[in-house]
Amino acid sequence: MGGIVPRVFVRFCVAFTVILLAIQFTPLVPWLLNRLFGKMWMDSDGDILIVLTANEPQDDGMGAITFARGLYGVRAWRDGHFQTAVLCGRGAPAVGQFLAAYGVPREKIFLVGHAFSARECALSTKQMIASWPGTRVLVTSDIEIFRAERAFAAA
Image (cartoon, rainbow, N blue to C red; front, side, top):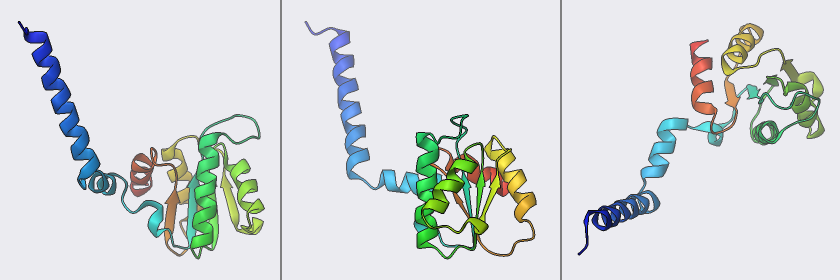
């Protein structure tokens, strides 16, 4: 007297459990993350550090996403051998103060505060650093890196 609904539910639960086990106990997730995000900040050594800020908030403060990106920028600066830091987006002034407070020399921080998307940041940053020699390293959040990396490559 089982009926079709309990059988479908049991099959769904079994399939869901198998998928969760595959995600948890196989190298599927690291492989997928490497395909989506590349090296990201693990190999963040270069000459020009580019930090994309989030478009929040609209006052002089710094929101949680921008704070995290600024923190990644500080860590990359400390771990690498960067000559300059280019900060792009509405949160660029706040992140500039943040980086300076954590030891990045103010004369090595450049702001591109008028760009409000990854594409605008890529185009504006390209104009600014086109003649600067060296390796460029892009820092942003994990949810933004896929799109931002492609926007910078297209620019």
